[in-house]
Image (cartoon, rainbow, N blue to C red; front, side, top):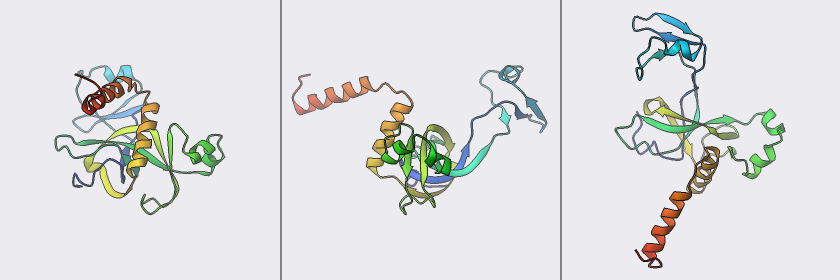
Length: 184
């Protein structure tokens, strides 16, 4: 298990990255029996709302970028996004110029650099946000700096269509109040 100090926002880690469940899926009974379920209606039938089900899931040991600090002992999960290798087909795509210039809304390029800890040029895929259990993090290999993480945050806000207007207004109002330019 990693210490909370290692599981920091911006860390690049190898870990067991889950893929989204899809049908058909194999459900496991408490007695070890397996049941093939072909759709959501079949899955819901006979299960209590909010109850847990055990299913066979696809996972892959892969690099991921941690999106927040794993310092809260009460939380077992971290948020991360997957990192994939740049492939020849990606370089040939119409959006590669935007990736290279740092202007792509969902992909963040990581060139080969010792500080990232990855053996090949890679892409952070900001459309693949998922929860990963802290125990599934195998090894921290590198990390992004604060400027890169600000860029990641900006891209995530766009990728997730977050409305940050109210938050920005509240922060601006508080800064003006603290500076004495705005009376309470």
